Amino acid sequence: MELNKYIEHTLLKQDAVKADFDKLFNEAVEHKFLGVCVNPEYVEMAVKRLEGTGVKVVTVVGFPLGASKAEVKAFEAAQAVKDGADEVDMVINVTDLKNGEFEKIVAEIREIKAACNEKALKVILETDLLSAEEIKKACELCVEAGADLVKTSTGFVKGGVGAKVEDVKLMAETVASHGLGVKASGGIKTKEQAIALIEVGATRLGTSSGVAIVS
Image (cartoon, rainbow, N blue to C red; front, side, top):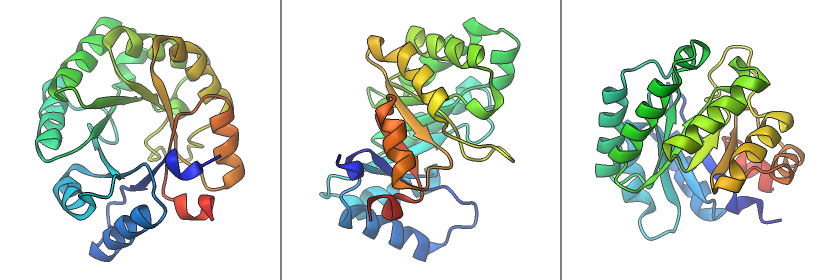
């Protein structure tokens, strides 16, 4: 199993410095990772550094709380694509999901997908905050709205576990037949974890431990 081809090498730390980004980009090229995931401010830098390497540039919008207005997330997504992002990971509004505002969620995802100008859109569900029933429902809404992938976590929930095998399995069972992928992210630190998540349906892995996993 070529684990490097699943990995989005991730650096979303608030206090990241230039040396951290240099390391991220160099490691992504060296290990031929699928992509890097950085905050929107650093998309242009990543695009410039990774040009011609085949490594995708992924960014996040409405991150990490998902509580921005839909039009703000859409603007963020449009700007990120304009800056050269290959893919966008948006955070769902968990409050809306728990309140049963399903039409609002579908409309938001559609608006952001349109702003992505045909670039892939992943929807972060924040599974640590959801029941199995809520995870399944959120996945169904993503299918309805035309998202490209569903994603477990931001990695920013205090005390959160992140990607769990049972959650990824449920997500894959709900969306795979509709052509959507599943990105497992949050707390993935070992090769064993990575393989277990892929075996139940993860098509992507978001992790800052990519080098340790493939080494």
